[in-house]
Image (cartoon, rainbow, N blue to C red; front, side):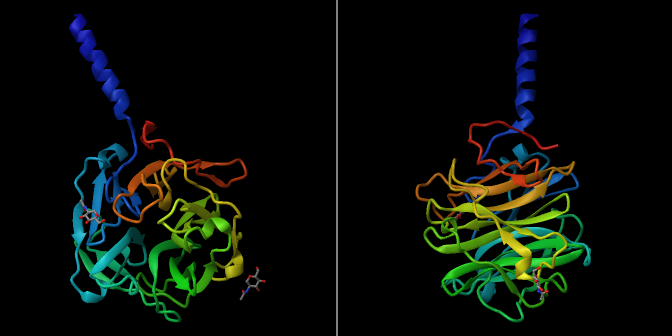
Length: 324
Ligand SMILES: *[C@@H]1O[C@H](CO)[C@@H](O)[C@H](O)[C@H]1NC(C)=O
Ligand SMILES: *[C@@H]1O[C@H](CO)[C@@H](O)[C@H](O)[C@H]1NC(C)=O
C-alpha cells in the first residue's frame, strides 16, 4: 500500500513538473530565434549559418528534446552562406507559408541580402520548400538583414535592418507580393547611448500588436558586447507606417541584461492568443555573436497603460508554466 502511495506521489510530482518548462529551449545554436504556433504545434527556427532548420513540438518543453529538421540548404554562390535569422510567416494573399531569411556569399558578410522560401502546403512541417526569390529593395538594393513582416490594416510591410553610413538602421517597405516590395523608408537610427555600445546598431526588428497598438521591438548596440538590449518604436494610432514621422522611439530600452545579454527577439501567440517573447541570451561576458547563444521563451505582460511589460530575462532555474 505504502509503495503504491509513494509511486502515486512520484507520478503526481512528475505530472506537476511536466506542465512547465525551463529555459533555455535551445542550446547551442539558439541565435536569432523565431517561433510561431500553428494547428497544435510550436515551431522554432534559429540561425545555423549553413542551412535553415525547423524544430516543432506540442509544448515548449517538447522543443528542448525535439530533433530539428533541415528544410533548406543552398549552394547558389550569392546566397549559400551566412544564413541568418529565418522567420516563418503565413501570407494569406498567396495562401502559403513563407520563410524569410538573410544570406550571402561565403567570403564576406558584405553581401548579406533578404531572401524567401515558399512552402508547398498549409502544413509547415509537411511542406517542401522552394526558393521564392530575393527581396530586391527598389530604391536601395544594398546590404539588408533580419527581415520581418508587419501587418497594419491588412497591408503587409517588410521591416529590416541595413547600414546607412556608420549607423545600422531600421527600414520599412510595403509589400506588393510575398517577395516584392515598394521603396524603403528609414524609421529608426541609433541615437541613444544604449543603441551605440560597441557599434551604432538597430537590428532584429519584431512586430508586437495589442489592443490596436503596434510596436516594433528591436535589438540595440553590438551583439559582441554587454550592451545588447531591446528597444521599441511605436506607430502613432491610424498613422501611415511608411511615414518615418509616424514612429516614435521610447527613450529607454524595454529589456536589458539580467541573465545573459538579451537580444534578437520574436513574438508569437499561444493557442489562446497570449503573447510570448522568444529571444536569445548568452553566458559569455562580454556577449558573443556565435552559436553559443541560447533560445529563451517567456510570457509578455501588459501594463495598465496598455504598453508591453517584458520584465527581464527569467533565470534559467525558473519553472515557467506552459502557455495556454
Ligand atoms: C508624415 O507625418 C507627419 C506627422 O504626422 C505629417 O505632418 C506629414 O504630413 C506626413 N507626411 C506625409 C508625406 O504624409
Ligand atoms: C552550431 O553553430 C556552429 C557555428 O557557430 C556550427 O559550426 C555548428 O555546426 C552548429 N551546430 C549544430 C548542432 O548545428
